[in-house]
Amino acid sequence: MRYCPLLMLVLSPLALAQDQAIQRELMQRQQQSEAFSLQLRQSQELQKAPPAKRALVESRQLTERQQLENTGERQIREVRPDTPPNLRAYERHKAEEERRPLLAPPPP
Image 1: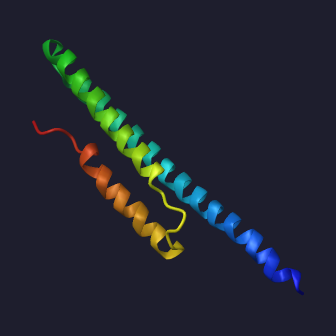
Image 2 (image 1 turned 60 degrees about the horizontal axis):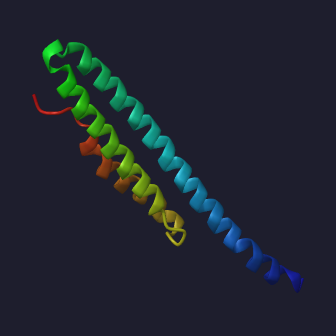
């Protein structure tokens, strides 16, 4: 019985680390899905672009993909191990809202 508190002290940081890893994985999966959607939209947009403007469209699209990737990497780095489990979903939602403008089609 006296080993129980010691065991809990040892396992507690492991549980927090695992929870943080799960949070990161969930965010990465969402980011991968969003990156795929962006690339699909961009390829459709490029198909419709006139040949004279293709280079300009490709350049803008590359910038959009880089911005999304940089934002995603920053968000993954900012996942905090001390975030309470009941706020993890909120943290993912907040990150998704931050990426949403980067996924919107450009104005015509």
